[in-house]
Length: 443
Image (cartoon, rainbow, N blue to C red; front, side):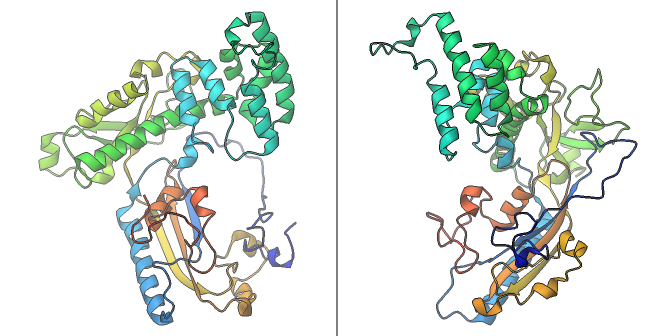
């Protein structure tokens, strides 16, 4: 149930930030289930609260502030729809601790012990219980040192097996129920200590694939930045790759014997851009794609193509690593991804309000509860006389495009939780953000 009377309408304005305002329903049995690769896109309707375009002046004129804020927001929203944004993979692709790709790199090298160590090592900002459990695991071979002997090399293989098995049985009890990877690893090592390849294989396949997809995404983000920063931001160049067609074949997304785990390659055809293509202006930047490294993709023939090898070499990898995976279930065919993503059906509205928690968007739950948006418009108006500005924006993105990246382009501000949780719902929004230069966009 919602928390308190203020949550009854479903506007996401409770003191707990909208907790317990999710409803699911309208379930039914259908003939064909949804499979990976069938998604056509996602619609987002987002509220940005307490939007300020410059630090507030003590003698600021409300009308002037309103006009400048509205003009800035409308221009930013229009630019997003007209020009799009760089189609980076969002930070969530790399996990809460930004180390998912590091696990994938270790797996590609066949170093499963290192992969397990990265997953299990102590992390920042976890609960004391989990932090102690990780620390105990990290020092599992130190637990039985005698006479101050610091040399774990003196331990026999049998010693290590027994110490690791005992530690795994103890540590797994202190982990959270949703720590799927860690629990799977420890349950395996409790039975088969030191067999890290087997332990990694006990992680669900979709999560194991996540680590490798993070490597592809990490490389793609770097290559995309290089292509736009050092070559050209607004011109197609010889040697680039462009997407010619993208057909949604029947059964797309269903792995078979020949297309197993190609991550969306079906129906996609690319072409290497020639000088003739440039002179005839056959393609634009919205046609430009970069490959996600895999065994079934082509690479640009200009400097971008060489950079793939350079970045892989920097991480101790080569393209052959993607073909000779130690785990055959994790085959990576690769994919093509557009560098520029243009949202569809962009709609936006600048709103004024007073209550920092006032609903600004008519949610589905409000509609189900038959609550009109205006019914909530004067909640605690007298509690805060300051006029606040909000931006309600909606847009549609293709599969695998990130709304967080679109918002980063819109706001010119980070979308990470570390930054966002420091913003204020009233007053100068970045007052508590240490080190933020308000005169310059944050990269």
